[in-house]
Length: 134
Ligand code: 5GP
Ligand code: ZN
Image (tube, rainbow, N blue to C red; front, side):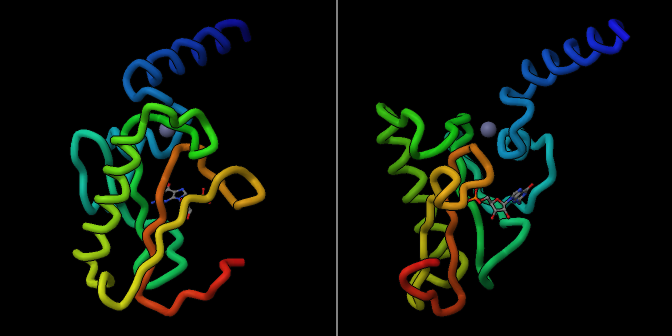
């Protein structure tokens, strides 16, 4: 039993060393340790298709760095936040939804519907969006 615990701990430590936040699915996607349909990557961020698209175009832009969300301390991350938006615009252009219209969404904390606590920007389009979002 105790050996089981030690093995689990060692495994977690190894994963953390290799992938950063090992329990975070988006850290794993950014490290290419979990599968995703990658659309774009650079040294600061990664963009990939959402696994459960809510619109004809629905992709996510995430920083490589593990930041839990916009509600967390994002002070000092202004350059990175701006870069994520610029990449979102580039993705919208490449997906052909720039002219028709697209929406960027960052759900923050439970009441807003955040389910993955690694900052991510939804880029959605290809259909008419309602306002206000429900
Ligand atoms: P949130 O609800 O936190 O604003 O958005 C999380 C989004 O991540 C959801 O739209 C969900 O479908 C997507 N998602 C969750 N897990 C995965 C995954 O493993 N791969 C991909 N590609 N998307 C995921
Ligand atoms: Zn993460």
